[in-house]
Amino acid sequence: MEFHGTLGTIWASLGMTAYYMALIWINALLVLFLSPLFMIPLTWLQDRTKA
Image 1 (cartoon, rainbow, N blue to C red):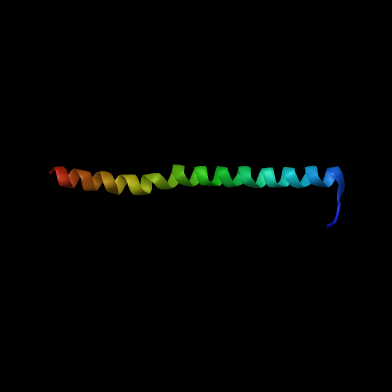
Image 2 (image 1 turned 90 degrees about the vertical axis):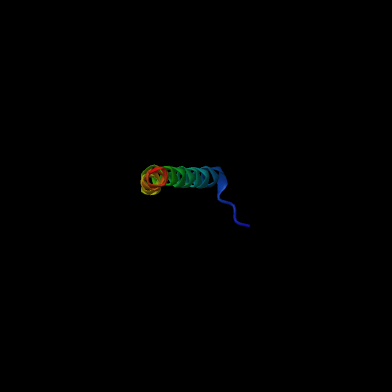
């Protein structure tokens, strides 16, 4: 196994942290922007079933 020292370990951990933070941010934005695409037709369906 290769050894890259303490700085390499810190650098890799910072990179992985940034990656997972970006992944969580993208998923949060997808939920925020895609949920109305499903909620609006569901409200139309509810209105039709009440009528």
